[in-house]
Image (cartoon, rainbow, N blue to C red; front, side):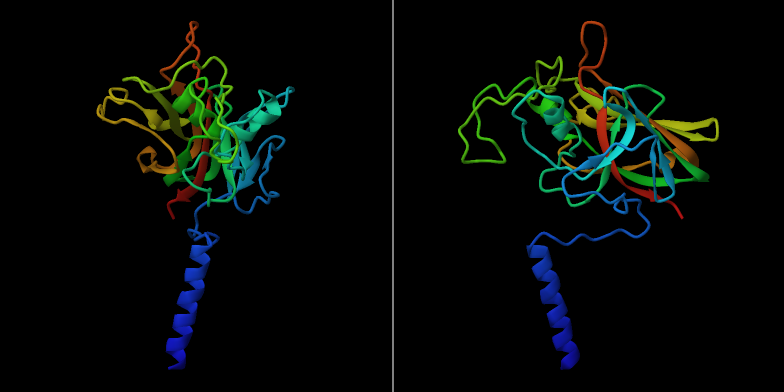
Length: 268
């Protein structure tokens, strides 16, 4: 009888935690960045990169305070900012966009604004089973709304506030990514030493006809998606870049080269 009561008590305790939306279920051996301690709702742009779970992530710091490569964050703003300042924009640039409160704690944010700086390395050739990918809030709002909401809407975070037209402050963006052929994707290239092992595309926005292998796909990612990278084989380096169908008159992508990653699983 005592054993039964203990089991019931344990079940009730777990149920209570779930109801409070506070319990996180860690995945053994996944690289989650959670050993990188951060104060609540903040981020860190490290000098020269950082290491998590034995993987070395590159960071290139720029004199204006921006970066290329990877930083890490636990921010999760999912709404608009009120001013077009760098500090305000960074609130969304360094936030993962999720349907509900993000439960993965710390994660990495990438700025792949060139083809060389956004990468991570592993000492021993290893198959990467999967990585979680997501949009950041800055890009999600730009792709979903364009320049602004168009009509006055309530602030999703403050329903009692007066309705207003909210701006995304995405440079050069004037329309939504909702046309056939529109896309925003991350390109992942694998290397074993200096030898390329393959590449694959991770679509974070894909409208009809954009992905020739799946021409009926029509989505904008609103949460983490697990992507199988085992087809790249054993790798010691992954290099990331981005591409978008939405460009300015000079052929430059108008969707900024940001994305988020978490939950890296290495094959043992």
